[in-house]
Length: 151
Ligand code: ADP
Image (cartoon, rainbow, N blue to C red; front, side, top):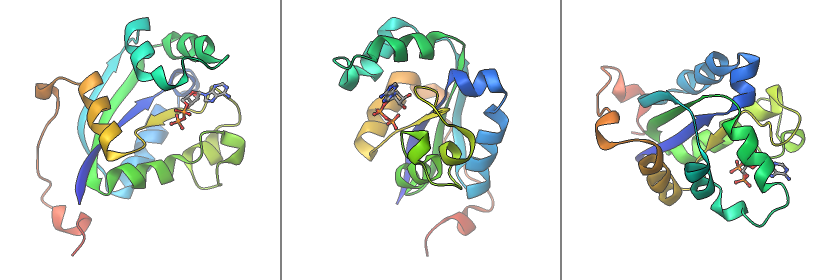
């Protein structure tokens, strides 16, 4: 089923000039960009986004890292997009991420694992609303849509 997922291109990717490479990998797979913008995250949005980690000793480190540069937020759409993107992104800990994944090929430490991707369709819905207004999402159809669908 066609679904949407949220991606954040994190500060280490911005610093290292890897934003284009990361976007390429996701576009190459056949995912459609339906939202994209650059923004500076602040404490309020990060406390919400990483609420599930607020008791971890490294929580403030993540917040500082995520605020350290502007980031790129994207909404991608496609068949099974949430799971497909998580597979392309790879495991949270880059040293455990499989070669061939973004984190497996391009990252080695933490918190610098280059990219955030929603981990379930429910989370994706919440996260898309957290970062995008309704009129920032574009419902457009590609002429080649047929080739990206499951028939
Ligand atoms: P994911 O981003 O893969 O969904 P989590 O939600 O568990 O993973 O963690 C959110 C982010 O917090 C990670 O992507 C990473 O940037 C950072 N992080 C996770 N675990 C650690 C850790 N042990 N030390 C430092 N940073 C971490």
